[in-house]
Length: 548
Ligand code: GDP
Image 1: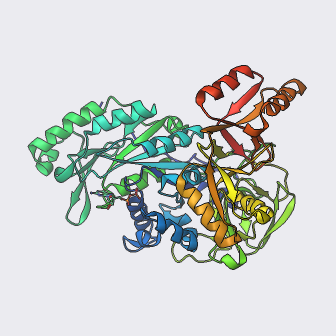
Image 2 (image 1 turned 60 degrees about the horizontal axis):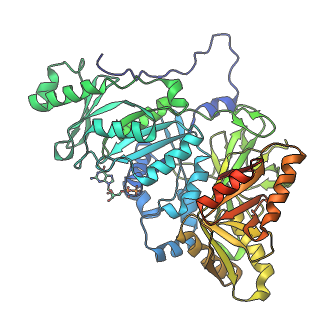
Image 3 (image 1 turned 135 degrees about the horizontal axis):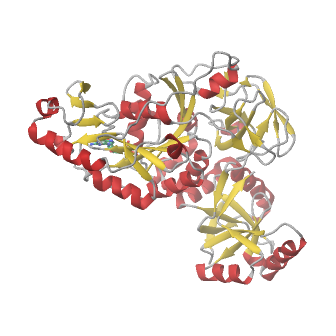
């Protein structure tokens, strides 16, 4: 067999007698909400730009780079923190392509802010994994992939930088398959690499897409045996293509169900810098990426096509206006239609939240839209009322789960320069924890709070915002802890509950409550953690918690 069949996937045919779709259903079905996961430098920003160009959302390459974040020095990050309006603007990029509305959610490039990325991944329905063709799978790719796997997010892979010296395509596919335990199916196959990179062979459509002076050019052929390939590429490159593409046919065929469950990824080869192969990728996304699906909430499963609105906050960004302490909460809509001027229920508190001026991130001229649909993300300005993980509804009592917190490995004691400011510190830490800047833990022995972070930059941001916004000077003291776990009874019922109480009393200085008053334990070593796990079989020690 020559090429795996990546047939066009049709939307389910509607019988002649089926009732017309509701507006919510129609709009929901054309949403594609996704993020790009990549190790820094793999080409995420360059690819984002190319996607926006194809979607007509920007006119020239360079627009995103100029506005968005780049690799920055530490002092640059501090400046960004003071100039946060920029990141609000590039947090969600919406564009239309092939009749669909794509919402591309941006994630921070720096790994110290990877918690932000994990949370953003809870708000997407698909991801594009960008891999540098010379480097293969890198540390950050792997971590982000694991988060996608946790949530069964379907992944489309783009092997980038084929215009540079690259590893053998088969070797790259093998690596993806083995290190990520993910089935792969090549959608396109590269013709050479580096200076010899000539384009790709589109496996599904038996077309050569060639890289030329003026961009891409399609040459239909009848299959890999077509002698036209020799004429177009030359005899030797044609033979090389045939040989390697032949071996590639050992990979499984594309199968929609397997892709949607996150078990199989279609692979595209290209060069974002040269704008090559990006259209293939976007066509692939348009065909395969799922529309918003049903989401599990604590009370029940919510279908996107329901008329009542529901959604959850996955990100909070402090606004540019420091004077007013405005925060923009990013709401991912899960069902129903959001209208400007709606009042929504914040389920955690029962409060009614007016949504008078939602920020809609609509592509072209950033026009203010009047409504948003499942899969869309809107920004809601508020004064610290909304927090990460909050569910908003039209009135129903339900909570979406899935915005994750991971056990941090850097744990620092907060030291306050002026003890008179203890109350202020508490409030400031609460607000910044609401925003997900850091995780905050309050030790059960009443000692100073502990903050948990993934990277040093988070601590820098915390202390600089403490001064700028609250007038509180803090420093951080090292602790002997290298990890923490959320602790919960294994079974509901009084026995295991009592065990938890006993456990927490064994060493109150090593125990704390998190931001939601959930109990946690700190450990100085893996060995100590394992010992506690063995000694307390009626308890669960969790490295991941889903916020509510
Ligand atoms: P990010 O850190 O993942 O956002 O990566 P960038 O998009 O900023 O790209 C990192 C560097 O790789 C930049 O210098 C880009 O110009 C370069 N780059 C990105 N894509 C390609 C490509 O397809 N080919 C080549 N040769 N360079 C690329």
